[in-house]
Image 1 (cartoon, helix red, strand yellow):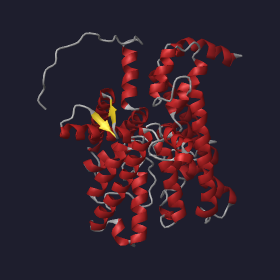
Image 2 (cartoon, one colour):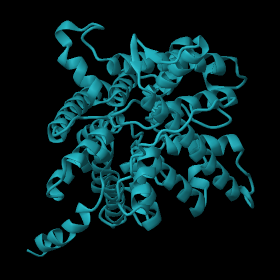
Image 3 (cartoon, helix red, strand yellow):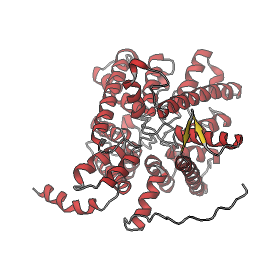
Image 4 (cartoon, helix red, strand yellow):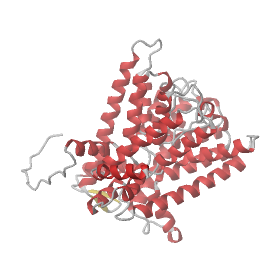
Length: 466
C-alpha cells in the first residue's frame, strides 16, 4: 500500500518529463540502485566500498567494462549476478526499456511523446515499443543461451567444477552480446587466446549485438529471400560498414604490430596472429574483451591509434555498443564523396539522404570529439604529482574507451585518483546515452520543458568560404 501511494505521488513528476529527460533520470536511478546493492557485504568483499561500487555500477549500466575491482575475486556470486543483470539492462537498450516503462508509469502519454520516443529509439515505431522490446528480449535471450551452451561444451571445458563452468559460460555470453567486456578473470580472455571456439563465439556475439535488433530482425524476416532488394538500406549499410571496419582493423593491426619491434604479434605464428588481430578488431567496436595484454609496451603507437579510431566509430544504431555509430560514419563519407563530385545531394545506394540526417551525423561527430578532448584535458590535470606520469596517448586512449563504452584499459583507470575516475564515469554515462540526447534533455530542462518554437522565418542566403 505504501509503495502504491509513493508511485502515485511521483506520477505527476514523471508526467512532466520528456523522453530524453526520463531516459537520463532512469539511467541515474539504475546506477544509484546498483551502487548500493553492489557495496553490500552479501554482494562484495570488504575491499569494495561505495566509490568502487559506484564506478562498477556505472560501467555495467553503460556496458563499458572498465573496472577498478577484480570481478571474479571482489564480487560474490550474488554480486556477479547483479552485475550481469545491470549489463542486460544497459545492453538491451536503456532507451528502449525506459520508453517501454514510460508507457506504464506515465499515464496519458500523448502521441507526440510516443513519436519522440520512437525517434529516440532509432525510430522503432509509433505504438510498437512494447512489441519491439519483446522482440529484442527474445532475440537476445536466444543468442545468449546458444553462445553459453557452445562455450560450456567446447570452450570453457578446462574448468573442472560444473557450477563454475556454467556460470562462466553464461556470464561471458551475456557480457559479449551486450558488448560489455566484463570478465570473471583478471586477464580477460588471454588464457583462451589459442582457443578458436571461445574466440569465434565471442566474436559472433559481439558482432550480432553490435549490429542492432533492427538489422537482425530484417535479416530474419527476409531469410527465405535474402538479397539486396529485400533488405532495407539501413541493414545493407550497417552490414557493409561493419565488415569493412572489421577487415580494416584486422589488416591494420597485422601490419602495425607485425612491423613493430617487440610487439606481441611479432612473436607468434601467423594463425594465432590473424586470430588475435581479428579478435581485437571486433572487440574494439565496442566490446572491450582482450586476448592479449594491452599496454604501451605491448602495442605500438600506430596500433593504439588504430584501436582508438575503431573505438570512436563503435557499433551500429540500436545495438548494444557505443561510439558515434557506423551509419554516422557512412553518412559523413557519403557527404564527403558528394562534395568531391560537386553534387548538391548526398546519395547512398541510389537513395538520397536528407540534409537533416547529414547534419545530425555532423553534430554527433563534432560533439563527441569535443567531449572526448575535454575529458582528456581534465584527465591531464591529474598527471601532476605522479611518479610515473601517463602519456597523453594513454589518457586519450582511456577517454575514448570510456566515452565509446569499450572498456579497453592500458593500465590507467585503476591508477587514477577519484577525480580522474569521475571524469571517466561521466564519459561512460554521456557516451552510452548519446551526446545529442543528453544535450536535448538539458535544453528541455533549462527551458522548463517548453516546446521550442519552430522558426517559420526564412533568412537570406550567403556563401561562407570553408
